[in-house]
Length: 188
View 1 (cartoon, rainbow, N blue to C red):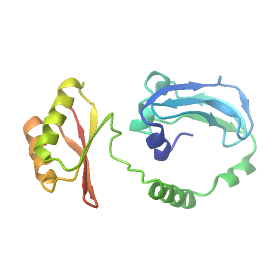
View 2 (spheres, helix red, strand yellow; view 1 turned 45 degrees about the vertical axis):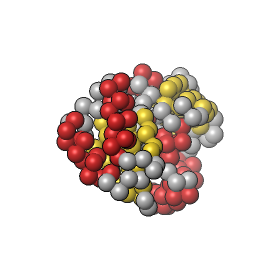
View 3 (spheres, helix red, strand yellow; view 1 turned 45 degrees about the horizontal axis):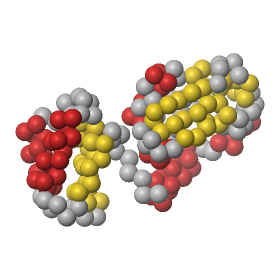
């Protein structure tokens, strides 16, 4: 079990994860542990009844894994199923995917190839001025830091590619939505 990209986005950067002890008996809806991000704190509840058989200790040491890889290394826990009939209440994958896509659209959630550690939004400003700010952010950041840059400058695509080529900091995701350009860059 784990979280979705929707939770990853809505919690912000995860800062803390805790679990109940393995071997704990759980019923549907019972608290299994806690999650804390920069925007939200909540409990993690059991989707089925059973026994908490395994937890992902890596995410207690590095909660950011939940943001970077929620569907892979960011798994949360495993439950040894108590009642197989309960699985039918969880829904089938095509319906679940359809529901997640619907929620993403409703909440205007942007999923990127990498979860941004920092965000730089500059509207009505020339891209060159945005790049000065981005360079300052990169100077203060550690290697691997991911920054989301959003700009409405019509030259943003060209300027960001030039910046990436000059600095060696890769653009790991980019898109245009309406009049806004979104770039996700990673410090090398």
